[in-house]
Length: 640
Image (cartoon, rainbow, N blue to C red; front, side):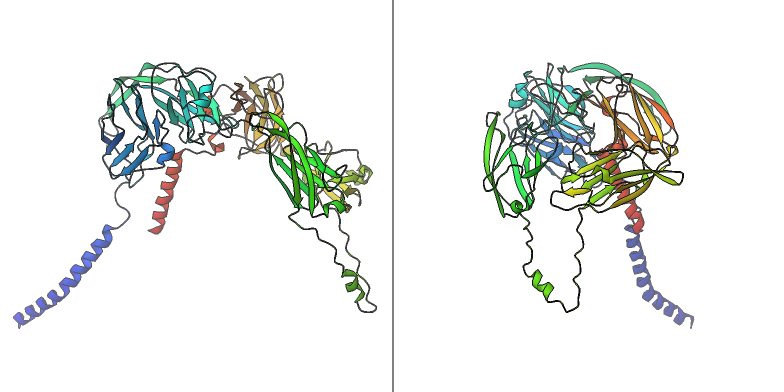
């Protein structure tokens, strides 16, 4: 009996055991794939060898093979990898497995140091860890040139770091070399605007920045952004000492050892990049979007307006001309409805044109302007439709169509604010006696005088100015028919009340500036680097900003060399640098009722470290990669 039971148990075990075993295996397999895994790989690839060898002399090979300790890939090689001396024929650069193959298509120059600067383009295949600042060097002669020149390129107008800009050295010290010859040595800026030109021989150089559109390593297109340095660059090196720490473990150090090393100078070259003004003058396009207006767009600034002559109409007193300050965008509003109802306006246009010798000469174009929007003609059957109405049914009067106007008069008026009227078309006439401003005194409304004038830039805009008294109430009103447009429409009645804000809602900021030119001005900026206010620097160095809303601000100073009240670009041919720009190095934040005097020495902080990081639009690549990794890690955590 007992033997029978033992046999039965064995049979059950034989049947159950495979099922249990399978279940354990499935569980184990499922456990292997858990995302908790080991620690994240943060180690970049390691260079282990090459053909030819790194630092090889008398090399004649145009093909270079680099080997690494793990599988690698190249990120944005065409943007980041730079070969110096520059190659007219773009080299072939490919990554495969643990190797990078470089094929130089230009002939090698004799007795020259060649540098293939990969920057941070080499990353491991799995985690994307970059092998930062990696460069490979060899020489076709008997020695390696080891000097380096480093610095930063910034946008001259706002000190924004410029990524991917070419920086080059010329041993030919003539200015014409920048226009005619390729660079001797080159590098490219990283995401911080930093550059390091390697393999430089001792000597004297000119240094330039170039956003090389046609990739010929020379400045021959006016549209290219450039930078140049006023002083000669003389590479040198000096012996320095750094402290290296020997560690027993991660918490305990053994000794601190002094080590000598060679440091290369200059390492702080600042280049301010700019685009030159386009002095070429020509007509870009002409257009007539609506029947009553046509527009001319020119390539450059002009001192005079073009001369227009009608071919199928009389141009005398036919237009209201609306132009911008540069005279490169000109709108012609056709006053006569009989004229703008014409399908085609034929005319000749005479203007100054830049010829092949770069000289301004008169040029006349014949134009036929057809409106893209057809004029809506009156319906001839409209009267018949009115007659068909039933007996006793009265005609409904058509609603009056008024001249559209946008009134800018906020209900909570700033102490320094003003009222503006913006029209959709030019104004033929207006009656100042029909414009009223009243102030509430106790319970009564009192008429007060004010200034009212057409805007100096926009002829369709009118402004009302008054020295508002804080906390008081005002009422702005305009009688009907006060403004008449050039096409017969007039304005409806306007009435708007508002209250001026209290002085207790603002703060006052004073800058005590040192180091600025006599014609400098300061722009107060918001968190998006946009101008909020602008004030001249007084002779005593003070800049005053009153009635500021509480919050965060930045500040930018422009040394206004020509005193025109705006930043001006440079001119390479004339040796003129762009007007110098400086930033207050921190973000300022103040509360209401504060009055602060902020000292500001514009030269106390290096220019490349002045602009606060919060304002920079060009963020460092490593910051972006950290954000990407944190985002990926958070996404993995959510899936668990």
